[in-house]
Amino acid sequence: MKKNTATLTDNRTGKTYEYNILDATRGPSVVDIRTFFQDTGMFTYDPGYTSTASCESKITFIDGGKGELRYRGIPIEDLANNHTYLESCYLLLNGRLPSQEELYDFDLEIRHRAFLHEGLRHLFNAFPDNAHPMATLSAAVTALASFYDEHLDIEDEAGYQMMARRIISKIPTIAAFSYRHFLGIPFIQPDIDLSFTKNFLTMMRAYPGGKMHLYANGHEEIKEVEVRALDTIFTLHADHEQNASTTVVRSVASTGAHPYVAISSGIAALWGRAHGGANESVIAQLEYIGHVDNVEAFIERAKDPNDDFKLMGFGHRVYKNFDPRAKILKKLQDELKEELNLDSHLMEIAGKIEEIALNDDYFVSRKLYPNIDFYTGIILTALKIPKPMFTPIFVIGRSVGWITQWIEFKKDKTSKIARPRQLYTGE
Image 1 (cartoon, rainbow, N blue to C red):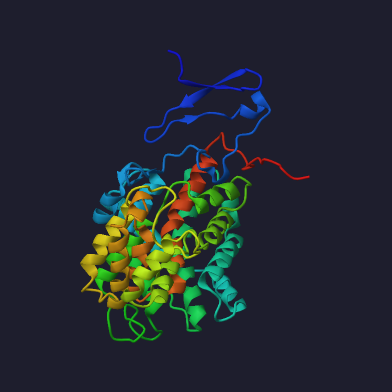
Image 2: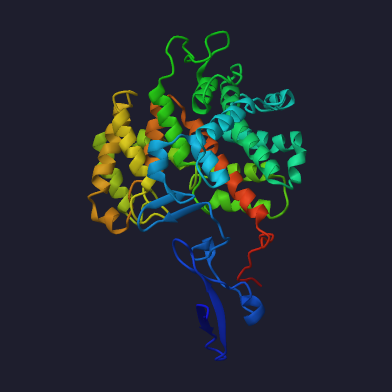
């Protein structure tokens, strides 16, 4: 049976080249042009990789036109509504959901690995008190590589799993310590009696000497509805195919660098306002707009081609339909409106923006729907998580995706060092 092929013709010479078409189980097929330069002496030109598949992957699938997101073939709606974040972590790492016994063992291991080496704790003293948590988090994860140098040369599945579970468990602790150092207050150690997400909230809020599950004010317990909301956010952020930060992680992996260094590079990339920092920008913009009466004026500014103002939290590089994660958070936001006492002022502004944008031809024709960042900021604000911690929250959720992508790259025998080409137009 003849393989599916694509024929390319150089109109300058009339010479024809034939390349195999590789079929996907979901989504677009690809033209295998790995020998294109060897055959033609030319490069392909695709700034931003808008039409280029950089790898083969079995982890996450997105259909931007349909608004579809799946981890290992399972729809994100199922995972967010019926499973915990740790179940999604196990799924990404192992290709299937865990049994109850496997989940128990996985959870227990994550709890016990959450503690940091005492030497690493001293690193925080090198930063000023007001250092942004993302800067501290990135540096501390890089430093983590020096404590686990053995992960540089992993040769079996047990090694991959240990390395992955270690980074997944320690990043929430590092993030919480980064935040408390930012405030200049004592660290709270992990509590192995608490679940993954409740433990993180405790390390953020508790004071030494009190019960570990209390707020910083010492008298109000962390509500289970808060844990569920944040756990859902972690799940929605767990992986997102070959986005900018994941591409960075894979590129650094291609150099043979330590896996935690690759993760740190992903953290740095995620910090950008066009990527993970967008949810922080959404809240800042809502505060800047200030009042619901000002919304229409800012909408008009966003539509003005001569105005640099951009409406944050709308549109997506991949999704040309409603972001499925945004749909889940919109529903969650509505459910938690009363239980979490959401900021009614910001909610009113956000609601007005959403109402206008979803019915305005300018936004509808350009498929500028609310994305995950539009709703994440509101919910994180309701959880009493300050803006500087919004992107670290993203990091916690995405750590499992990054490390799973790193493992997949390392296991791929056809992988090579990342080395894009260029169109040179200089002197």
